[in-house]
Length: 65
Image (cartoon, helix red, strand yellow):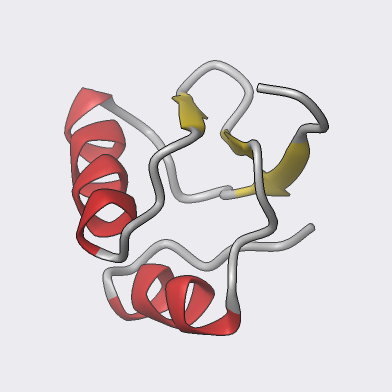
């Protein structure tokens, strides 16, 4: 991962959340990312598009930069 884009996801609280977020990101074609339960963040090698952010919000995980 070169430049890292960090997104705060305050609703991450367990391993299930990480799996759910991972599933949403993968289904949207995002491949270069890490979901951190400890930091409550998504770290991505590319900026997350508006559609991806919307899909995460619809899944119950609002995202802030």
